[in-house]
Image (cartoon, rainbow, N blue to C red):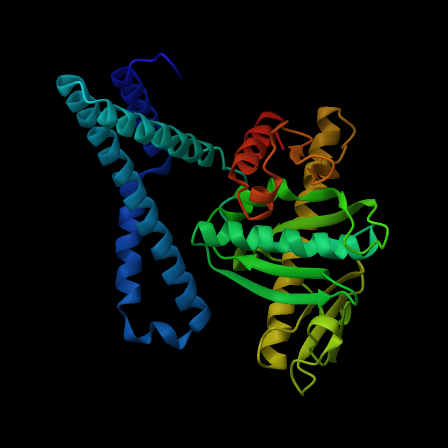
Length: 368
């Protein structure tokens, strides 16, 4: 927005923020937060740890959102004052400081505006992410581990709690698969555009001749199941196996058969959990992951039916979605939205908000 009068831009951003608040409804958020504070103050809350954690996570999220909205309004006002001060005193350093703050506000409000597009049936849910190494041997396993770190770093940057349920390590390097949760409201709606096949091109660390290698990893993003979802799984529909947890290189990480693998016989879906302390806890976590996978399967089937009715043949959008190139140049490009950057290492370190925002806009525009 070069050449735009700062006062006009501040007025425009203030108007955009008001529109965002009309959608997010801070009044309703404050009412909900007050009710959750009462629950959090109840000494008996922690008798049900799962419910207590949901209460505290939701309260923390609402308080952060309310503080963010209030902070943006105050910063817009302060930036207007700063520009006025710079103008009245012809102070170039102050003018530069105000311009930098205005640019930061523009970016933050743009990102917040994207959030208002998350109005799908499950968009407000927490997310479960599964990553699987695909074609490419050791490079694919290494790439799958890179993606796991990328998402965990992204969540860390946003202060979103995560919980790793299961990681299956590859023999040479990297991982065969992993499943973890992102415990934040709207995590599913925010991340669901990441679902699909990711492709990496780089010089192989595992090739003696140092040749370029292309490898692939699949990312599945699922909404966390809630009690209202009615995902019924009969005991005769599953096979439960227990085994000893293992770490990198196949080393044992505990001495009891506490890890649990559940196979859903009608669909062939297999899930496992080995990160909890007891077999009972691992089984409960594995069942939660299985329910989430079945819920996402149902959502995709419904989406394909709607797509067929629209006349596009129900074509899947989540096949190969993004290319990561580290050699002979650096580039990361989303194949749907067209978002692109030359700083591939920053992306792999969790700086993926640009891609996520572009995905959300693309999904909304294409009616997904």
